[in-house]
Image (cartoon, rainbow, N blue to C red; front, side, top):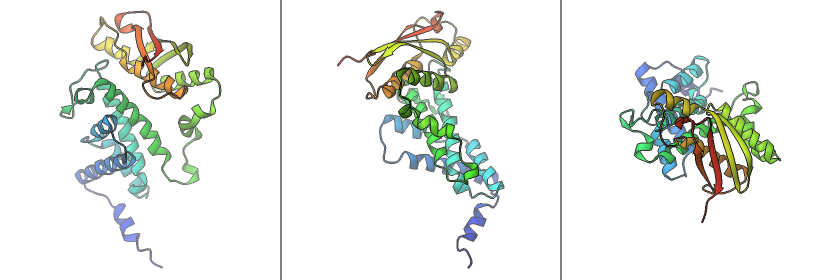
Length: 264
């Protein structure tokens, strides 16, 4: 019996002109991301979609083209193409932040923190990074190509870790392995506590470009600490308020954050 889909599969594996292939890659990645975010709404979701639109799509093109060269229908590689665009877009959003490059425009459009605000930009970048992993683990492939358990571990580990000490240690590991810097939690509990950071990617970038500042500037770390602790203690977003008491951008020896429950 002749496979009725065979002509379509052959056509999908044929080489396209570069300009057409780049346009197709952009459309595939944006469509896959849009589908993943469908049914959701809000400024953060709008900012995530805004961020991935309008790029050159070089990375998603390479993902789809690699699949094609190995005889894999690009449709099966859509998740990988979208994931790598999410990671790229996330890095741009965070690099544009005032605590980093402090850029006003990206791709000829206002940067996310200018179009919305700094908090929305931080959360949009975080969301894109998380979405990339979500897209990757949804890819259907042969068992010999399955992603290692480490990726799934990122998604569900907090529910399996029982002690607070272990959860805080895992939060520190995730922060450091993401390239953000080093966090040390001190006497942290459901009511709050203190967090120290002797090293930070954002601090290094700021000092290299702008030098010392007069006020604390590690806004990304404040948001990450608040969100991480809310996840650990299973509180609603906005439960914690994080203030930066010392900042290496001000030439303090290390960054010091105090965590308290938001007063209602």
